[in-house]
Image (cartoon, rainbow, N blue to C red; front, side, top):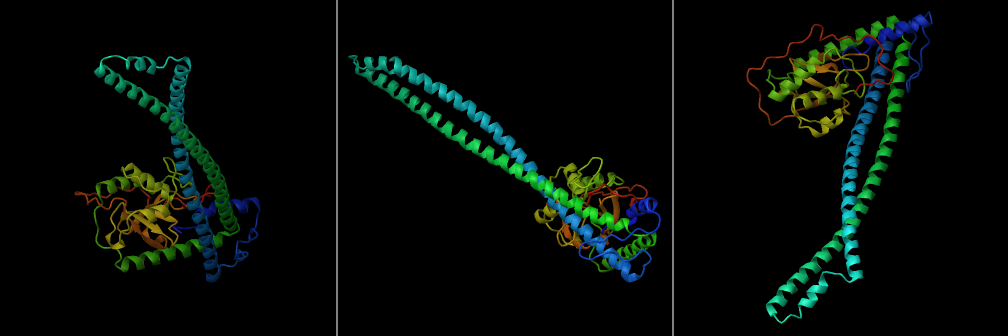
Length: 386
């Protein structure tokens, strides 16, 4: 996981030890059984714990992305339903007017006061040209009546079709709302597993996990930078510079799952809002960002590009430059600067591939402590990465 995966768990472990003095009993975790005893800090047991935590976070990330995607679909359905409602209201108003016009025709014919009657009488006039002129008037009146009836029939069909569409849109909203609730519950269940495992660990185990993860991140970053995957520095586009400046300004704000600012963010909430601030609308979720935005080779990365992680594209960060990214890492952590290789890289995408690099680029100034963040303290229940 991004940054130091377990620093934020220290507060959870400390709270657990205050409530129940002495080592807490190890809570069983899915698929792997109970974690090692608190006194067992061998390399093997610590590595197994870190693997368990990373797996649980990955499950939470996947559940979060599914939840966010459903939330976006629900937002689209609501917008479509509102549009259908407006169109249906307009169609019903038009239908009402057509029925009034048809009613007038019916009354005129029933009362024998149809405008055709005087024209028919005028046809008996001795002036042929006058008769032809009146014939034209009669045809025009007849055409207007046919058009009135056609408008009535068409209006009824249009109103019926729109009403059916509106009912279907409402049904889809209800189904999506129910699915969203189930996905929210799945996210909360995944995070509960993480919190139970972390609360069961001793201070020695937490310290060992921190060392192991920090060592792994440093090793991965060193190997990545030595591989030559990143080329020389490239300036961002004007929009990329604006997006990056926005992301940097959010450093220190908390991670909250499903959040899109301004006071908190999740990972894709940060990137989508940053680019939206730059005038470029991009998909909401990391998976959709990876699927729909143009890919860019890692050796052509420039600040503002989005770096996507894990095979399922369940995490995303914004490239800062010099092998570093700005990201909202996970629950309990804050928006921070991290090594690009802190997570397994999938690839990168560029929201503005047609825009050229800006001139006179100056990297944004970072606030003090931006590269370390604050990973202590337990995040809200049910708050996964995403």
